[in-house]
Each structure stands twice: as C-alpha cells, then as structure tokens.
Image (cartoon, rainbow, N blue to C red; front, top):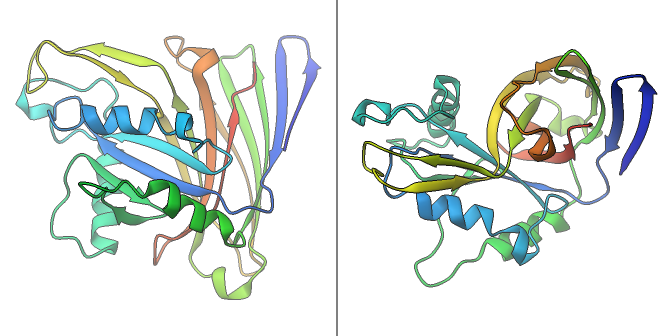
Length: 250
C-alpha cells in the first residue's frame, strides 16, 4: 500500500505498509571485477519480466570490494557489503565466500543447470504468513536527503528474539564501461544496486521497533531510478520475516 502527499514546498512525502503476503528477499553479491558475474546481473534484471516484481520479491544487489585488487575498482563496491556477505557465510557455515552468490531469505540459492526454480521458491515464500509488519514514511526535501521513519511489529513472540530491521536505498539502470580487469572492454548493466544500507534496528521484547534514518542523496544518483527497501531478518537464522519496497519520493 502506497500513499503520496505534498507536505510542503520543495518536499515530497510518501508512506507504505506491508500487506498480508510474505514478500521474499533476494540478495545478489556481485562485482564488476568478476567475469562470471555479468550473467547473474542480467538474470536478476530479467526477474520482473517473469512476474517476480517487488510485491513478491525484493531484490538487492550488493557489490563487494574484494575483487578490486585485480585492477578494476568497482564504483558500486563497499567493504560493508563484503562484510555482510561474510557474516551470512558464517551464519550458514559456508567455508568460502564467492561471486556471484544469491541468497534467498538468507539461505544460499543456486540455480540448477537445467531448471531455474526461482519462481516456485518465491511462490512458496509468498504463501507463508508474514512474520512482521513494516510501516514506512519517507520525506524527500530540498536538502538532497530522504528521511525515513519506520515502525516494525513482530506479532509472534517466538519470532521476536534476534529480529532486526534494515533499510536500503538502491538504484536501477546503471552502466559501466570497464577498462581493466577480468571484464576489460565490456559495457556492464546493473539493476538493484545498493547505494546505502542502514541497520540493524533491533526489535524490543514487545516485538516492536521505531526508528528514523536520513539518507544523503548523491547528486549523481538518478532520482527516477531510486527505490527504498526495508526488511526484517532474524539475526540467528537469517530468515526474512517480511520485506517491502517503495519508490523514493520526488
């Protein structure tokens, strides 16, 4: 559910609330320095055309920085994203981290050589009752920032321990002309590129969380292609209780 309003001159406001369907979270760990990553980037970009839109699955592309040593510095990479991938690997008892890697609701997801079952896997998640409710209010003003006010509720007491909320600003329709490294000479396209990640915001003993976070908006980011995602995830298991995506108000 999305509502738009105009709170004042030079500012835009929107609000959203998650619904009765559990929305999946798909994370792609990728790098412009990895020659096996472009097919994975194209695969996630094509999901919406297959009906896997944000109302069913929220997709986030985390560009890691550990490939930069090969001579190409991925302009979208951040050390924090590499750390997030390593933490997920430790939680899942993985011996290594690698790219491209996909995580579906916190668990390693590998496409079959002959069977791509992502639609069925997402559909199964959508059939579950959501474990959390997310409410967001966004205000974008003339100060080149978006302010996010969020409230989280986890109704079931058994799911409250370790529940944490996150916010992510991501951008679609990005491209790079790579001049060095394994992808030298290629023009790479990306969607769902995480520009900024905030959290975790912990849920209290009552299963509630309330927070305000301000994201500075880089002038180089294309406002029409910016989205804000929120998700609630278990710290222990990595399971995602609910996810939500909204456009960044303009």
